[in-house]
Length: 385
Image (cartoon, rainbow, N blue to C red):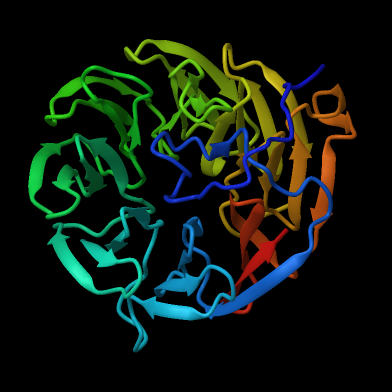
């Protein structure tokens, strides 16, 4: 009958430094501030192509994947700083989102992972794979005073030293890795989760050894999402640490950190783009609806319509509001309003018309960054506050 409790949030200084929002792919800033009423448009950026990954937002720079290019924009006035394909690109498409750490942008470019200076776009190093990347984003894992970059392409999962690009380990998996990997919430082995399109979910330790793997017969359609979030102090961690994935049979599956199956929740349609987790809930867009599931047992808390989407519409959770695209940009309270299943009242905080199909939405410092497919072979980034 009801949803989840959550406060509006108090943190006004936060980033969205990677696709999935953080190294758990939880797409959530539970203590963040973001618009709770109909927002105001602060700026727009028009581009050729269609949205192909989360807008990544740091203190001064925003990175946007347009499908045919990856563009760095000034955070405030959206003026272009540099791009991966400044002279145009007819050869291939870019998919997924970059990731940023310590002034470096790690960009998946066709079949090559490229480390670029965030300010200038200068190539610092690059590492080629034998296969193109598919809807993935690099995972950055802190390691001593630096960090490692973990990314998969084809059947290979590889880890590189962030500053130098030196390969740390490689693991061949049984199936094609097409989406981002995620770090386990807490593990003495430093485990990361990777999923293959064939339906294998792997937990791999910090030396590339497989701790466990589980098979999902119908295949896996989303990146792994860890049920974890940071508390208001920024240091404490909340959540079970379970890992959830969207299944090819139209369900969401949950496994505990040791790989034991926890629950399965059937949805009407397939999960689109990714899953958000926070405030005790798991949120997924599927079949023109946003579903809220109880993270503990997978029971349906509530659902609401968001309209047909022409692009993936992964939800983002900030404060006590879930933001999700569709025919419009929607802001929906985590409590789900009142009602029963799909019959709800008071769950929608706003519906904002963006003149096209709203796709990926992220947030930083109290603003929303929504990518829009215009339906004419072009796209638009909209910044709202």
